[in-house]
Amino acid sequence: MVDFSGTKWPYVSFGGPRFTPLFYKVTGSVKGGTAEYHPFPPASKGFLYFHRKPGRESNIFSGEIRFRVVVNSSDSEFSADKLFADGHDLLDLSGLAPWRIHMVNLFVSKAYEPIRDLLVHQGFITSEQVSQGKRVVSETGWTRAPAQERILENMTDEFVLSFPPGRITLTFPRSDAIAQYFLSPWMGLYEKGLSDGSQSEPRQYHGNAIVRFELARVPLRKGGNEHIAMVLRVLRLPSPDRQGNPDGIPFHLPDGGELLQSSPGFVRGFKLKSASKHLPPSALEVLERKYLPRNSL
Image 1 (tube, rainbow, N blue to C red):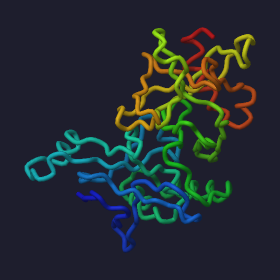
Image 2: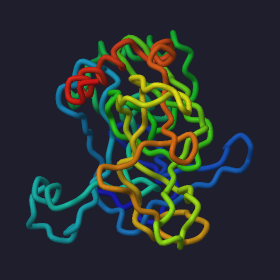
Image 3: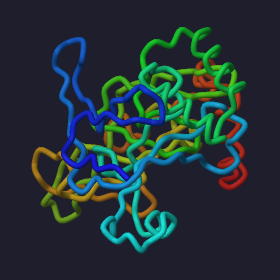
């Protein structure tokens, strides 16, 4: 069991002679000299563990390291299984998703080699998979670890997005390649004006949100016909005290979430033909299987 409470870059031994630095969150630019290292939250006492969603074992880049916060850490009578069951995953800085070190970054960053070696020793991955992963990283020219919160193993995975967004880079790892997809930043989340006139103009949301790709029938231009398009649905927002709205007024989602818009009242849709040029072939197939039959699009 380890205690990261309040630390910015604790060094951890994973069984070898090397110590590995871990970070809770780094914002700004390291090269530009504006980096800010955010400390682990208070009560970050527990243990690191490997998590992989069922059915994704065939993807050598699937899985991640998480931190399980232990609630009754002082009670020695509890077994490790009991402590795990009673605990909870440490959340990232957004407060919406588990803190993690994704498998992609275990391959891209040399600093994480001891963690990867331990996963081999414990049987989570094989030496052959490590060799294959190194080859993929080398062939695709990866030198910098991608943003943890926007690595999607599956096109239907939820991820964290900040609003208003800047340039959005998504990373899609497969056993034979690691692809990236760039989304236009011209979209936002808007709250409709109130019927009583107390709020006449739509408010734009500022802060983090959990979003997910879907397929829906939407017009791709104002006044145009509806087409099947890829859209982003906002599923969850942080608690009001963690939102960043300039007016300080909490932002609320309707039941079922809200589709992102290019302007108030107009859904931002992405053409499937254009998206297929940049996304892995299987990505859109996953969306079609999930949404086309259900919605009869």
